[in-house]
Amino acid sequence: MLRSKDSTRRELIGDGGQLYLQIRGTAVSWVFHYRHNGKPRMIGLGSAGNVKLAEARQTDQRLREGLTQGKDPLAARGERRSLRLTVRDAADAYLEGPGAGLASNTHKSWRKILNGHVLRR
Image (cartoon, rainbow, N blue to C red; front, side, top):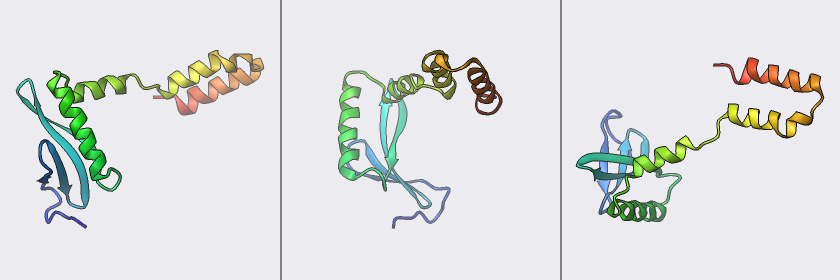
């Protein structure tokens, strides 16, 4: 197993191009280094234990193709994350959709439980 002697120090092993194996202590992951509008950027591709080298290379190739088209991979990732459904959205959608047919008392108690325990901030 690859390990860094100093858990605070980051070691990078290049695979060629912009794909690197990053080692921090016992954590080993794939990262993609690039520049967008002159700024150095890095995007994580996943743990080396979960993402095989072939998959990391495919992702590296896809991200490089996007860069040649002027796309910033981090901005695209942020856009995808902003489209994610929240627990509150899912609960509201259910209670207004299929859950609207529940008995009035059941609907009220579910809403109370969700607001009191699941959706509170």
